[in-house]
Length: 166
Image (cartoon, rainbow, N blue to C red; front, side):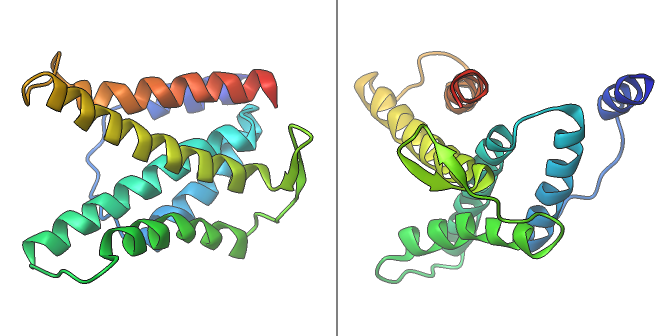
């Protein structure tokens, strides 16, 4: 118990970090985070949910970078986002084993992979929802940081649903 409390306290201490959003490195970090989350009792599907949102965000960053370089080709956005989310496969190369389970009695899939797909879809959906809401409001957000709040709230609700429903 003391170990869990110490880890939680250390996670909130400020520290200087050099971040480089290189996708394979981030997915390895997600795999390590999955192991830590398992030890803390967080369900794999919830970790996958947030990992899917992170990988989608990395794909959006790559698209922004490609826009700056003026690199455009047919299907670019879909290809980059799908490749970015597909990088969750790197976590299965390490210590994480593919372990399929029944999801809501409808299909069989690994909980991490299921959460990743759901997280990516939620992140993309809330991004489109934000753009629609912004356009309906004359091109302005309804409140500060609306673009950040929408996906986080949606992911929190989905996390809660996954904990209680799966």
